[in-house]
Image (cartoon, rainbow, N blue to C red):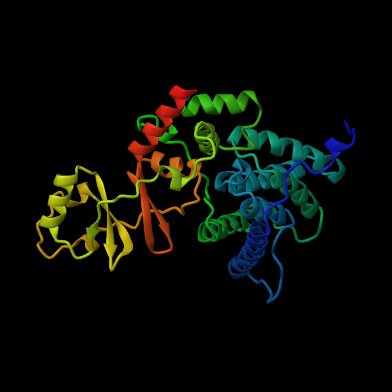
Length: 352
């Protein structure tokens, strides 16, 4: 074993697209933050930079790792602001910066722990505050609010807008309320509190949120179940002899098709091409004779014929989709239903 291996890179190389997304977001976020601080700072000169150095590290967390508990709004705003307040109080008691600086960081970490607001850049905020306090023109207590508090809020708001606009969840997902039963696909046999306790025992609570851990475990279970199905793909399990609706079919025609074929969902074709899928529940309470199958067709996710079992199980297990259309462009090739997957899994488990 190479003794120097532990000192090498510990994470896989990030995708270029994700790195560009984070970098551009951080740059724009800091620009927006500086602009906001300039607008709310009395007497600020045009072009004057009002950012504090630790905001660079805060921006990295908010835009590059928005799933981290350390990057969440409470941690950013409260962690930074609380650390600045602690540092100001430390400077007032311990005049010498040589002593005040390390003591301020020490007390800031304890304060963040008490407030459940761990944010690594906040340690740098405490240090930067001590250094700023030793120079001329330090504003005193207001420094914790402007620029530190207001800048942290601006970064968080920019992070919410940018991350959501580019397909990332920020703030991160929170566990469902204890009184709300999660969908079948998320019943891991462990409660949110048990998952939180597990993270705490492993000392990983600052690294991953409870809900994200549940998502990882669910995805792992889905992959494990898919292994029982070997190398099968969608074309191996889909139904090819399909009963379909025409886009122009009225309510009476649709109701008769569901009654005659006893399916829960029927795909809709328009001029021979796939147009969506109608669930029988969509007909309940409908009386408008002008409604057609095209009006009720839902645009559910589809998969190509080469899709693997894990992809199929993920769509069918989330509770929102009874069947997955298998398409080639706009052409409907087949359909895979939940019943198909249950029957297939059952057969493979018996064989095993």
